[in-house]
Length: 249
Image 1 (tube, rainbow, N blue to C red):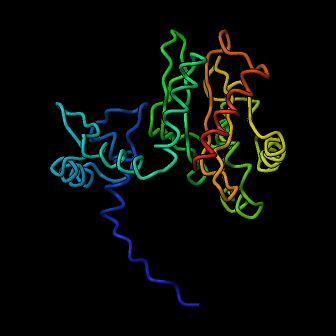
Image 2: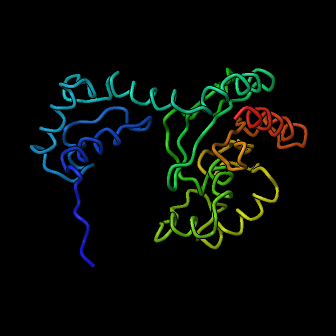
């Protein structure tokens, strides 16, 4: 069978990979760090960086670069295109106001979740994952909820050859471990547990379900374990908010 031609632009892919290097844990980078991150020479990285800076996607101060407002506008355009973003905001804010804990909303992208909304608590000890953050789905409550809606073939396709880099011994170590947890998650209808990624944080996640019965997003209520308890009343409040949002999708 003849190999299909690859029409992708390598230069565009390099530029996009540079933008993806930045995040809340790496807000600024030097040219050398950017070159190492995308595995090119400094001179090659410089051409991409100069172009991105000239077009308004990167900003430079001294010898360090960070994302510029034009890059942020792309993210907000993506968020504004999601029905779940507009629909979930007010119920999420209301749950935050009622409970005093942070509420997040995320969607599934490949093997990761992408945070698309955050109703931030004003508590001293607060769960705070910025909008746009990407985290491994297998190791997060919202990710587990969303993965539980995948068919078996789709789950296998996404995690074929996947490296389960665990940050907690409680996280699944293999696809078989994950599959067993997802079966329980789907039957339960929510995931409530201590975070595998942030020490001392508890999270309760529930699905946001479309009119066709598919999980289009997930929401969670997150807080420090000294303040948030995983009791039935709190879990039911999260589920009730999820049902409210789902009824409008």
